Image (cartoon, each protein chain N blue to C red):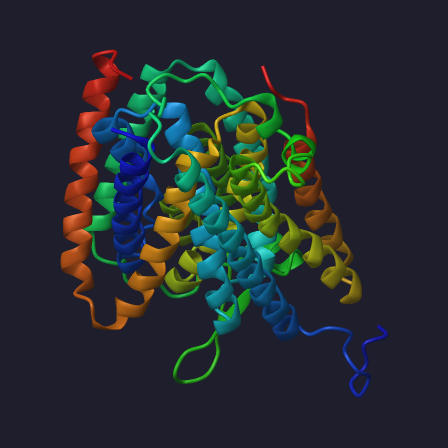
Length: 278
Length: 133
């Protein structure tokens, strides 16, 4: 296989991942690395580097649209980015010290978590909980637009959410993914932030988190221009296409299909890691 | 206490959101353009060569730092050009955070000026730190 053929294959995988990622709202980054490693035999570090960069592209592209709609909360995002960026730098440092087989198993576990999240329906909105004095002091409470005018919300358990964001950042730096699923869990479950605000703010934060790891990855030589080029352009094209088709897509079916694909990749990733093939 | 009703607010949250949206959009678009142009060049030049991604060797030194990447521009090396586009992409969220510092200063939101500066410091530490090895 020559470079032109490999670039085409990687590009096709990336378009598909970006497309499904945008349609399901789960981000396609998490499937590209295992697909490159398992199907094309690319070294884990190169695959992680290319995927990490593509994550910045999709996050920034999507955030540009969401920010203007007024869903994402920039204060919540900025405050929690302290935790995610510090976590990301620590994770990216650790990635060089940990053996590929352990990274592979970890990757598989994160994939299984994403698969589980993606097959479940969106949780029902809960009424506003007791608010955290820290949230008031940091002015994290906000409002988002609804058809009946802006609705306000309060933020709870700020410290728990902050600690969970450190873990999300570390996983992102360790595996070269956006770890959007973990960020949404921290905001939606722990901090009781409305789902739509959680997902859009998470998307907004992913780019900054990934940029924090990207510096370390670049200095370590994980980012190969020839391999990253088709991944970045493919994922961007796929996600733009996916966002266009979103209004008429059968979201729940797609989420199940995506969950199944991710689940299979997870098991194969763990198997290969344990068999010492990574 | 200066922002009394009737006084023009220095910069509303809405305006900040719009500027950030435009910044992110143009950052991604310009990066994608540079990467695509470098990519076409790369495929024309090396399309029929054999790739070597099965074993991790790490990128050559000149592709690991901004100075090394930029130094290749006059000679128009295609791999450097793609890498420059990727650095532009990494710089996009960093520019967003840097702009937020300015926005919070104009809004006189001291707590968030400090919070945003911490985030910016972590990003710059990661991007400029000598951390290879």
